Image (tube, rainbow, N blue to C red):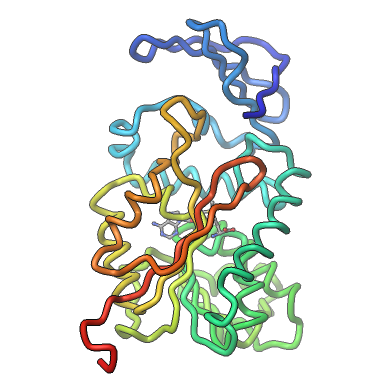
Length: 307
Ligand SMILES: C[S@@+](CC[C@H](N)C(=O)[O-])C[C@H]1O[C@@H](n2cnc3c(N)ncnc32)[C@H](O)[C@@H]1O
């Protein structure tokens, strides 16, 4: 794994179990964390994080992460939306250039993996972020509905989608609830592609009819749902909305992997278990800026194929 040594003033040291970590705050909100006890090279140097992010790379055990209050998680995503470009939705352990390049490769691999599952179909996207996948879905699908619980992220998505296709309806028709207020920021003309609808909220907050989509799509969202109960409820709702689900997740890379406080790296097998009784029908690994991602397609298993 790539690590870099950061220069800066030591702000403080924290004792966590038997490990001692040094936290350095560098110019521009860059944070470096060093495992002091082992004297090893720094575990994390983060690039272009927003100044509003204070705790992103504070080390935490899985059990501790599972108990982080929902309000802190939301605050993290609203702050993270202030990072420039794709850094908002990618790991700040990589440079903006690495993440731009990794995004292009990920888009190619994901849409190649899903060929035939999106074209002309109705797709629901969980956790749209800045809309980098939504734009690609909108080019291929008949209709796309997407949600995100961060109003800041959703505003970025709306703006990116507006750039993507100027031949669209007035936001009043397309953007739900609180997003309407944000549309005012675009001079009351927050344009969106006609085939995309965005919702502010979590998937189980939305009143959408059961089985109303050909595919539910998500990319690196589930690893950020830390509370196990919420994760189960989210998956149940994904399964209610469609008989076909695609997930693209950063998967387990070992106990010592320096992942953010707001991420839990689960194994592909753990996801397979969580999605039961849906069956895993296709799987592929993908290296995203050196991180190990797994693409998985699940389908509802039918006893009677004519059902
Ligand atoms: C790493 S970003 C990925 C964004 C997008 N899927 C992509 O691949 O570019 C994760 C996104 O999920 C959103 N998110 C996290 N938990 C969520 C939840 N429970 N419900 C809806 N959105 C959530 C965050 O606000 C953020 O925009």
